[in-house]
Image (spheres, rainbow, N blue to C red):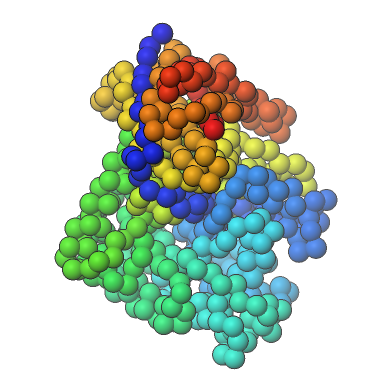
Length: 501
Ligand code: AHR
């Protein structure tokens, strides 16, 4: 059996995990909102039309923050269309996704849903067709207690208390030509700075996220971040990172190495932020908001077909990827990457939450099921909120089609000071079992409390309405701690959550 070793020490601390790295995303796209979180008339709908079964799954998943309302959608969105009496809200063409938006869910309903789902709203403003004025009005509408035009309008709409939304995205993917009214870096910097200024003047307690590049393949990647951050360093708190991993034509070995891209993406953007900090002569560090990440593109052809055949229909089944066991392993590896960069990544949003490239799938009028990727995310969110320790991993390495020196295993370790508990998340990338020795050094007296294991003989196995439990965690074999060393076996190609106390 191949062997690996890990050294963990309480003094090797990366930093406190910000729980917002377990965030997610709901866009007005496909069936995320309509027949996803919201379906009046559904047997499980509450008095506001929200599906209680879906909200319960969101609570189980554990998402402390949800980005809304887009995505590409936000760049053409008039937020005023989505407030006030539902019967007078306009039906608009959504140019981002080729559908019709009924506006039956808007800012207030989403804030209401967030309470039901036990989460906070991360709000994006439209810096495509709109700008600073609409953005500052929305902040006033959402956060000002009363006595002004927009706050009193909110009250007149039945929401006496402000929503107190603390985290705001300054537009979405503004570097992308597909974006409604996309901009050059200089143009974006100008509008983002002015928006940030007046939004913070309206409510100084908010934090703002400037758009970074849409992905690492953009021709302006890094130059965009440099321009935007150097122009507006003091106005911004975070810069966004977006990344999706394509599993439509990859071999498993190469696909499971793709988390190395996320490591280098994060480290590259940290370097750009810190260079901008020097230029700005600032004490402040810009933190990272990985506010769109996931596996995507299983559903490309189907989405193209549906859009072609049903253009402008409402709630079209778009981007409905069905995730395999292999995808769940990569999602686990990506979570490990986020945890191991907890010092700089303070916000991250699994894109998305329901039906659209999502861990939760629903049937209109019917049930809901957990996709394979639900499980590593749920476990990381449940057990990953503590101090991230830097694991020193020594493991055999291999090369793949696109990567060199890919380690057989990756791991993240979280120390829970309050409970005296240590949690190890680990993925074995190999096709054979891996024996791991974990040196617990300054963590004496530990024993294994629990080992949750996600493994399947078929890398392409999926969950479905017919077989919702096909891929689900089981109890692992745990391990033995002897003389300060934990020995355990990570089964071939598996995700493991090992709790010690
Ligand atoms: O999450 C789906 C889409 O991906 C978002 O609307 C956009 O921001 C990104 O390109």
